[in-house]
Image (cartoon, rainbow over all chains, first blue to last red; front, side, top):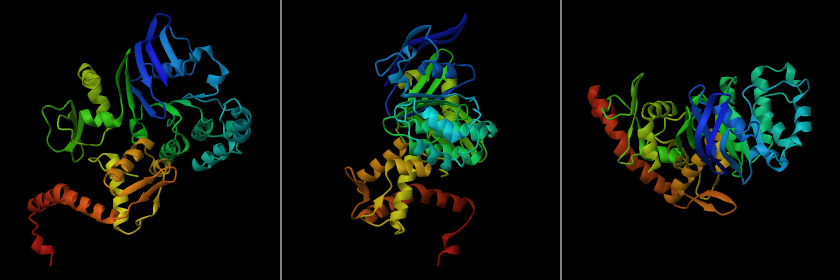
Length: 275
Length: 112
């Protein structure tokens, strides 16, 4: 369980995060969405203990990640957007570095590498960006860490790899692991992220499960625009719109439309979900 | 897996399993994939797969044997058939009829 209370972080006089409060429950795969520059990466690095909060607290299983206790860090994995390329074969890298994580499983690493169609015997500095990224995704999942923070993991992946990523995340994580995945590519992760967190400049606009979202909002794919729609957009063959959902009808969340609706109606959405 | 736009994913997955029971591909008493296996197969959140199984369990189409897994229930085919027929008549048929009217297609032209 992660509890973030009134978190603030600044680079000098540049305030990045302010008054962020958020709870992350165990065993979920959270999607972290937000416009460019709202502090998604900063939040992930704070959670991983790489930066010190300017104000407020982060509590992970009763501990502060910035204290960097090995027993906690051996259960946290942070996958940055840009990963370094060691001058050695992937399998050797995994064998030597995996030992720092309490539940690392080398067999699992090899298995996921196969699923992601990446050669574990290839030198990492000879890999393409996408192959390197897939190697580090395999490593991340093989740590079996209780908390995995991934920054834009689908960046640089080709189209089949994106689908394989979703499958691997679902199959190779356990109910004991909590994932927080930041992305701009909402479509890449549609169907795999639940709950969804939408971060704004210095605010959390939404932290709700797909079930809660569809209870409160209705996603309509039709031909007539509803005047009460919170967001609507013409698409080939009709329109997609997001409306309040007083009747409780079930629909399928469209993450892009959700994101736009939330940004257009910040206070209304916050109030709707805080009830 | 490509999902259609209107229906929640967990219901589409439940429909897919029901259809496999109707076609005979899954038989009563057969064991079905675990929640994680299904999530991995389809690339969906395990929680979504769980919701599909909860729905199918509530409908009496599958059951959970604790610690062993999920199985197709006895009488599942009948239940799935009744439920999917009712849904078809309520949701899909009116749309088909509306479109037929728009295109000036009469059932008698095609149905013998």
